[in-house]
Structure formats: C-alpha cells, structure tokens
Image (tube, rainbow, N blue to C red; front, side, top):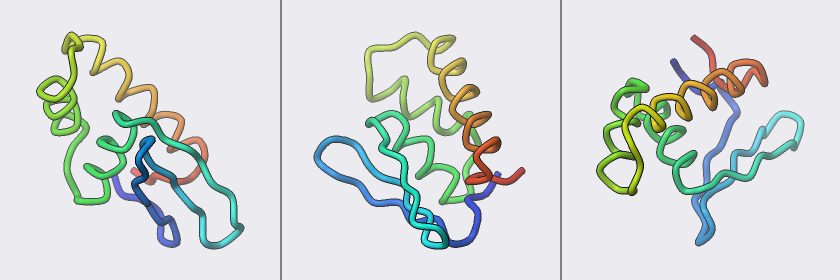
Length: 83
C-alpha cells in the first residue's frame, strides 16, 4: 500500500491532517489514524501499524486490526491509498 502522489500528511496537537494537494480536500485524523497513514507513507505494512497502536494505546490487538483494516478500506475507496 502506498499513499497516492500529491497527498501530504501533517501532524497536529490533535492528531493529523491529510491534504490532497491536487484538489484541496482534506481529512482530519485522530492519533491512531496518523500512525496508520505514517506507516503506509514509510512503506510499512498494516501489521506494523497494528503493532505500534497496540504498543502505544490501551487496545486489544483484534480491535486494532479491525480498525486498521477499516481505515485502509476507506483510504483506498477515497483514492488516497493505492494497493
């Protein structure tokens, strides 16, 4: 999985923002979503994002896996992420 060209990721004190530099649309991200997007931007796997989320937050692995899968699906649907 890779972020599409023209997608910028910026972290904020409240999580982060994805900006589509092509059309100006943006998406606000919470802290765990930032971890997922940063993992993909770094060429890492969804499993790496799950590992980091489980290590940093009080969440069960199954819940983290489900959340990462759902966010990945939404990012692909929005054409932000490409397989």
